[in-house]
Length: 254
Image (cartoon, rainbow, N blue to C red; front, side, top):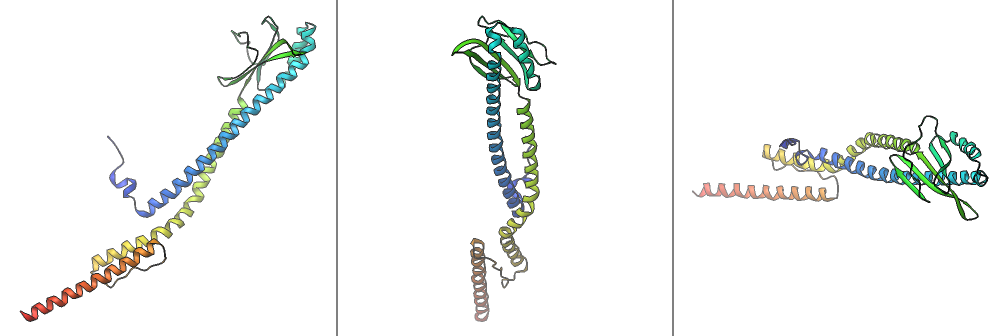
């Protein structure tokens, strides 16, 4: 099984890269969660607004078609529906009579009449195949006289989804550009004392010079670690001196 080489795994990265990666990853994840929450809220709200708009439009169609229905004048009803050509999202609208037959209809110019249109229920709001289907009764004196069947595409919804996707991608890229130098400076405040301590230990090991001391630059945990490190080398140096003195004593006596 292929995997990441050991020398390239996260645990083997140097401290600076680990801190940089952690800071940037945390920022990006937080940003994605916030942006996603905002986008989801906006899309749900926008979808609800589309339903409300089409419901209001359906009510207007019903009100304007009531006289045509009462006087059994489908030609007048068709003329009323023809005004929907300014609504680019509307694919078609059918007005059904009490018997379930089509009384009047509007079909967007570039579309063909849909096949197998079933008699609609009295009330329905359905999102299906990228479209919104709205079924609503036309009432006269609280009695149902006809039913409106309206189908609209969700082009505006998907256009907004694409726009939000581009905006989120732009925000993430911009945040990466801004976060990188900020993370670089922030990680230096954490990594520099530790790297200095590691470098001091390496120098002592290579040069066998126990006079070398790490320099404390802060009063946090790294400062505490440096103090303990220096104390350890002071004790170690004293023990070496005692050992050397003991060896000289042994040589003198024997």
